[in-house]
Amino acid sequence: MAKRESSSKDLGTRNDQAVELTRSEAQSELLRELVAHLRQNRNQLREEWVGRISETRLLTAMTKEEIFAEATSVYDSYVEALETETFEALQAYARNLSERIIPRGVETHEVVGIVLLLRDVLARSLFAKYQTDFKKLNRILDAYEPAANRIANTVAVGFVQERERVIRQQQEAIRELSTPVLQVRERLLILPIIGVIDPQRARQLTEQLLRGIRTNRAKVVVIDITGVAAMDVTVANHLVQTVEASRLLGATVIVTGLSPEIAQTLVTIGVDLGKMNTVGDLQGGIEQAERLLGYKVVTLAEPR
Amino acid sequence: MEVPILKQGAVLIATFQAALSDADLNHLRRGLVQQVVKHRSRGVIVDVTAMDVMDSFASRTLREIAHMIRLRGAETVIVGIQPEVAFAMVQLGLTLEGVATALDLEEGLAYLIQKFKSVE
Image 1 (cartoon, helix red, strand yellow):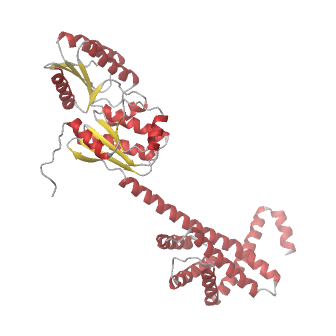
Image 2 (cartoon, one colour):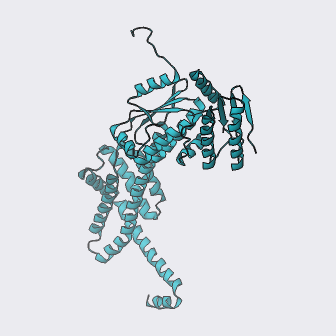
Image 3 (spheres, rainbow over the protein chains, first blue to last red):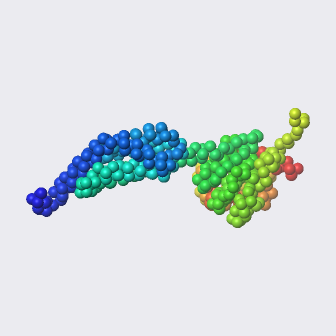
């Protein structure tokens, strides 16, 4: 050993790598021993882990049997990741698991919690096994801890990424659903807006409306914003621009259902009221639109 | 390229072709303002369907044409502004205030006829 160290000084980096290699080899050896231990005590450790999970009241959305089944496969993937030191399989498993449990309402802290619990349970069993040989315990932990932390990291990141993917997907779905341009009479469109309008959605609304005016040859458009609680100055300005752009296409815009907050915003930005045609509610808006278009709605008989 | 001015009954129609230079626009303004009285026209339609860009000079010229023709005793309507152009114009603050607009030539004619009727 002494000889090798002296030669490593002479040869510089190449031998440093060799030392590094032997160290990681020694580490792999330890990990192998560790994995063997974990495989041997699989049932007992798994039971203990599941016990700890229900003790800490994690995963309350799942039944005991489900937790046990998931715990088994997580345990096996965990040991496998320790053994092979490759995390791709675990990553895929974490994503798959997240896909299944996110709809059940499992939270991020629960997933991170159970993985950390497993880490602790396994560490405790290592303490128990090597309590007589402190040096060896230290070396085993040196090998175990980085790998275990990486696993915890991988699972947590996988879960969060999956969650974000679901959120993004839903956002897109909402965006597509949320901007209908509807024709209610010849040359009359209504655009009911519901929910929060951000600048991106405002732009999309404008594009759809202007295109709708052209394809439906609309003369009057009723934009109903009853379902919009508030809008910021940027979006309010955008609304005014939409009204002006529609006029350039020859269509009159009637805005209905302005909330007091939005009215306040529009007054604050100093909108030219000569350009904005507003009516209190959607019904009033449609009635005015019909007047503009020359429709006259009459009741022919009493409703039955 | 100069813009041809067509006469259709009591209406003059000027149709823009793609890109126009500032000189063309000035020429059009002069031509329209002269001919509107010469032909005793009551309305003018400026069709900008072919324009995919509207800069501030073009926009200002359109507004001037409309206002000058009003002073010469006729109505002007701008037709065929593309949706993208309309929104770009609004963002640049070019809103053609006080100028009538319509979707296309047909709508513009309908607008003018309505206008003529309301005067009678």
